Image (cartoon, rainbow, N blue to C red; front, side, top):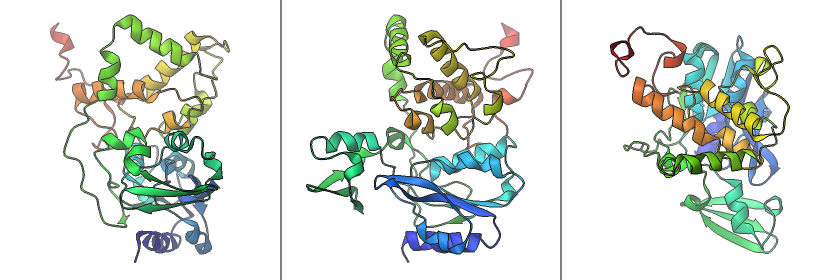
Length: 320
């Protein structure tokens, strides 16, 4: 039985006990899957778990707290589920987790660059996966692309390709990475002088249109009704189009996710102008891991910045 057939069977079985099962189905274009909410067995035939299964379905789980719901997850999605459980935002017993192995997900922007001069991404009529590659059919013929060339950057540093803590795992588990995240993306930026780094962020934030897609796509950003971006009491941010307010929001957003971000990359993927906002979250995640030995969605317990200890072993602030 293929993994896709296993998935359909798993969804049908889960629907016997769940209000719905959340995963991925056909999207508006061949290259894009859309979130799918199955409520009847016939919906199971629409489910897919593949190279195009990009969105993080853990985003929707807090809305279902108090009801039994199933969710199909890859490695980074499963870590988001785990972190939501750690923080009490969902109850583990109310979520039926169907996990699968992931060898990366598509970056439509990278594909678009390879299609330049051939067609627009929306004109691709089919995609099939081969060993380590994808073959796209477009009006002018076929184009074979190596997966490594068109997968999301986050996938190149993923250490946990299999869904952790799944109630049911479909497919053959992949060998997890034994190496540590080298944080090469951060090192490249941090090697520059302060003035260059500040100029980099000012340049990036000047393109921000304040759509808040980064916030809305984040599965751990759950306080949208009280977000500093919309609060008027206190009035943290103005509606100014200046770089100052845009950067201020991103710094607050990253700070609120310190020790909570699982690195799923949805914030950066959702940005319509391509601002590398994940860099800010990764910088704080690295610091939290160094100081508190805590990895969001992997280690159990509440995040360090949501708890209090009089003495932190790695800080020793009372001995200064």
